[in-house]
Image 1 (cartoon, rainbow, N blue to C red):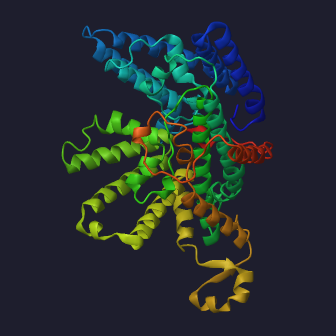
Image 2: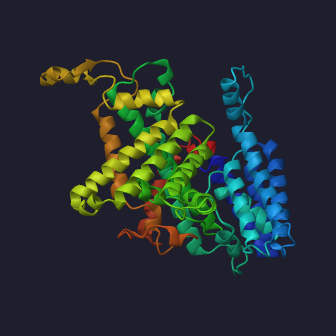
Length: 509
């Protein structure tokens, strides 16, 4: 059941809200939370009921383990926590990485491997990290008094269950204990449906529109030895924008849907393509994952406390692990390594004397260009089916397949022929200059317009507000007729695309 589907928007969400309101009126807030937890489990089971028992067993076992860890330590906490980490990561490794590990091991040993990948339970990467966070908080004495119904809702809450954000216990559980006079508050509903409308527009009108220029290149590179220049740039820019608007759409909708029920989730996306460095990019992209890896992996490994060399090793290791967290494939690992190396270069640059003299408009333009090129090169590996395909596409982008333009253009631009530029009549995805103008205009809009968190600042405070960049915008949402008409337009525009249904890209992770 996708957020952008008719059955979710017009059946599940209204029934979920009606049941929540009725339970609150008849039996109180705790009954309403219980209803919401049950609805969230149903939402998860809609995808594949077979995986519901695994989810419920995992939730029950981790809750019991958390309760034990919250008690005074009798000398067993260390072993209980170790067991919890091993079992949770073991389940994730079994479903997500077993086939990858076994097939690569067989290849190294010269053996044949005929096994098939296991069906990956939806959202297992996210709810595994949720539960690991809960166990660590219990061990530190920061999650006492959590009831089972609250814990089930914390893990299975449908806005964040499938693709995040990764919510820490103290970012959500205290909200479930707060008293309220009404099931729904007008301010929650208004800002919640605003974010939902913005997210639907981003996903269904923008992301799914540019997505049609991605697959014909990335999915068919193994069938060809070269990718023409314009095809390579169109496909890579289209994927760069598709992933941006797809993931930011889900992040906006998750925040909005949670806020409808009076729950504030952490912000997970803050205009990452405006970043002027890779360090800044990772403060803005998948924020909750970055903070999780920093606090629960990078710092325990020693962080930067044991010298620069050890810091660099830790950083590379964490980024490679973060890459493989996205998927069991060498392309994901290389993507993580690429960003790790870029971070090392970025840190070295910031320490250099020349960086302090490299300012002004020219410095900003150079920094943004270099950062954006680094990011899109990384996305090429992230999307490609294998590393060879990524190299072929990148070679095409930077002239390795020759400099080719449409033959009709060269008829009017004959002076380009002495420069080695040749004509081409058939393309994989390139259609016309209008197509390139669309992509460039969308990129400019991405850089100039504020994000949803900036627009709703003051009306909605994410639970990780302190971790977000502070860049106020003049464009501010408020409950008014103008904003209502705009959100209605965005919602209606999205509904016109209901027949073109597609999953969110982060569902596969």
